[in-house]
Image (tube, rainbow, N blue to C red; front, side):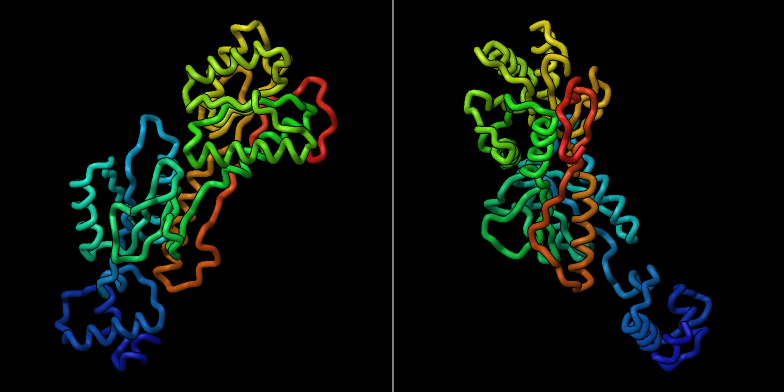
Length: 338
C-alpha cells in the first residue's frame, strides 16, 4: 500500500480506505480512480481491486450436452477447481443442441460479466461452427476449429493412449491382439485405431483386419463382436477395448465361452472409469485425462487474459496407463519397460 500511495500521490490510509471500499470517509471519485489505477499499474492482485476496476471474475463454460454418467463431468470439475484456485467462478451452460437456448447463452456470455469463455464438447470433434460466439478470450476444450484459426484447443492424446495400451500387451508377449473400436466417424475412435495399428507395427506385428471390430461404444455390440472373435479359426490372445464400458461386454462374452481372464485371454480398456477397478479381474485401462484437460483449459485462458504467450495452440494431454490383473500374462515375457 505504501508503493501505491507513492504512485498515486496520496496517503497510505487513503489507499487502505479505497481498496477496502470503506464508507466511513468520503473520498473524491477522481482520487479513488487514481488509487485504483496505481494499484493496477503496480500489479496489485487484491480481489477487491479487481472488482473495483470492473474486471469480471467469472468464466463461462459452454458445452453442447452430456450423456448419462458421462466421464466428461471430470473436465468440468477440473476446470471449476482451477478457476476457483485463481479466484474465478466457473459458470456452466449446457445448451443441449437447442438453438434458441444457445442464442440466449451467447447474449449472456457477451454481457460483459465474463472474463473469458471455455467452449467445450463432451465428444472429441472438429467444429464446423462454434455455436456460441464470444467477443471475449476463448479456449476450446475437447474440440478444435476446422477453420485452422488460432483459438487455443485442449485435446486428449487418444492415439498415444491406445499406443500405450497395445504396447503393454506386446511387451507381455501377446501377438494376436484384437480391438473393439468405437464408431468409425468419431475422432476418438479414429485416433485409438491409429494408436493400436502403430503399436503393432512397431512390435513387428502386421495388423489383421479381421481383428478390428466396430462395436460402436455399445456393451451389447462389444459382447457380440467378442463372441465372433473367439469363434475365429485363430482367435486373439488379447483384446484392446476402446472403452471400459465395452470391456464389460467383452468380459461377458469371454465368460460365456468358458474362458478366464487373463489366463486364457487378456483384456485392456480405456477411460479408467470406476467399474474398471471394481470388475473381476480388475481391468487394465488408460485414464481419460478429462480432469487435467479442464484444468489446462483454465490455465490457458488465464494466460490469454494476462496477455502471456501461448506455447501451443493445440495441446494434447496424455492419460496414464493403469495396469491391473486383466492384462498380466501368467507367463509374461520380459518387458522392455516394465
